[in-house]
Length: 276
Ligand SMILES: NC(=O)c1ccc[n+]([C@@H]2O[C@H](COP(=O)([O-])OP(=O)(O)OC[C@H]3O[C@@H](n4cnc5c(N)ncnc54)[C@H](OP(=O)(O)O)[C@@H]3O)[C@@H](O)[C@H]2O)c1
Image (cartoon, rainbow, N blue to C red):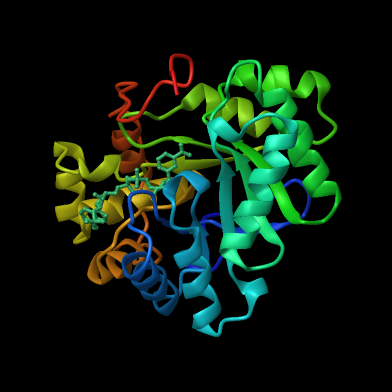
């Protein structure tokens, strides 16, 4: 069923509730800018923030969440272990550093940021330990193709709860989403707004038809396709706008028109060919 409110959640395969809609903070500068962005989002009703060690803004994210006065257990926070910190011992240290920066106690979701060859299986063992110790409520992966997950599952004790991947109308990820569904792994879209490349004729036409903005059309499509989505903005008006997607419904034909935009076009790196 499609989410009806900004705080509505999907239940991950271990029973943890994850809001369908969140704020991304990649490229949001540490300090006042990230603190303001998170504050705008929480004031608008967001209850899910997506950061990463790489984004170098975990201190600000934690500050803004603590300053909000909203009970900690009402906000879902994700962070990720960066590539240069992968491996068993280094990941345990990286998690300590993330917790120290966020100062939020138990984390909600910790992800392997990218499938670094030769490392990610060991990294996963560390995530399993952190999970078993109760220091994080859910663990998952990011930028994993089906074959990466197959490799992981060959030795894993815990099936990832989430796979966060680049996903938007130009990169539908149909097969990967189906793979994840069949393994009860929730798919989550990064760069849902195509990093701002919203000037697409199909989207613009639908925006006029529904009297919504291009961003709202794309984010509504995510929700109706059961995809967790985390648009980023540093602007209060856009943070509010992006979340106003619970008061209309795209009909089947228009959902199909957006599906048909797929060109397998990435704005970010290809998980099978990255060198960082
Ligand atoms: N796991 C990974 O490897 C990975 C990779 C990339 C991203 N992510 C996560 O996914 C989140 C979202 O992806 P993203 O930041 O790459 O891109 P995005 O959310 O697709 O797009 C963000 C861009 O769109 C602009 N924007 C936001 N709302 C808008 C609106 N209503 N109208 C027009 N433009 C708008 C933003 O500008 P302003 O900020 O100036 O408003 C920014 O330039 C990230 O922040 C991060 O948390 C994860």
